[in-house]
Length: 235
Ligand code: ATP
Image (tube, rainbow, N blue to C red; front, side, top):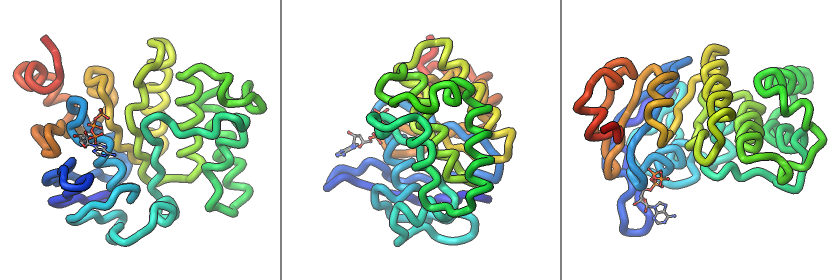
């Protein structure tokens, strides 16, 4: 197992956001985390990247993540593409992408990864010297995913990659996520669009009130009408 989580809890002050989460991600897997607003999806990703504190087992690649500052988690191979993208909107596309490699000094590999990001999202090569704030929301999401890839992750955390994005770019982004997985990077993706996530994920966890309410392969969940109706908002 690449990522192993057992009885993970996290809270904001006295309010619990994660009550008891047990889950795992294997090397090279694409795992989706679904669930309604406020279920704890963002908090789960933040607890893994150590931008919020959590209690419970949190092991990555055979060692605990507890006690590590967020930048050390990146060094261990976990890159987080956060909700809301958090880009440097007054810098160029290329500068934003290169900032994703700030902990690396392997120049040749950094250039190779930059070229790979540009192959994944060709529009970013065309717009390399454009200021990010002038791009569409979908293009900015591509920059955010590309920046996370520039950290050379073993595990990519994606928070709501399709939120607020036009349909055509959304399809492109989901295809790119599948391509990233095929390239050997494991992905843990929080997503509101359950149907799109089920189409590309290997396995799925459905969160509800900080608990895992359901889990299984994407094929199992997609073919279970009861789960679709209760948890995934399908009439
Ligand atoms: P969404 O899809 O709306 O982002 P989510 O499933 O990602 O929802 P979280 O954002 O992880 O859920 O929120 C889990 C719980 O923690 C919610 O009850 C939310 O109100 C609360 N929460 C999240 N962030 C904070 C914060 N900074 N301070 C206090 N409470 C918070």
